[in-house]
Image (cartoon, rainbow, N blue to C red; front, side, top):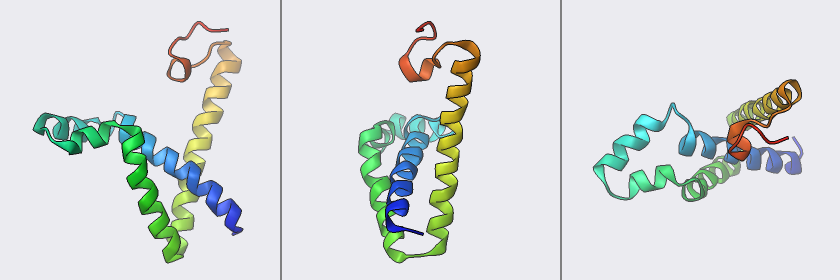
Length: 109
């Protein structure tokens, strides 16, 4: 795979993984557990900017290992992210309303 394509896939993958860790409902029990315990772990898991630094570092480490599993992983996360974007576009076309998670309100036209 071209290095530029791998880099772009890596950027999108970092964003997707960061979004999952910092904002998804499926990870919220883990975030809540660490927030209740106090300390920096709960803060870190709730801050997308903070956690993106660590996610980026892990991505770069795996990229440098040059393993085929890394290519599979970033391709899967890019596919996940692109399906979300397409879903938002289709929802907007169907309903002529922006999804609330994009702009905070469903009534913008």
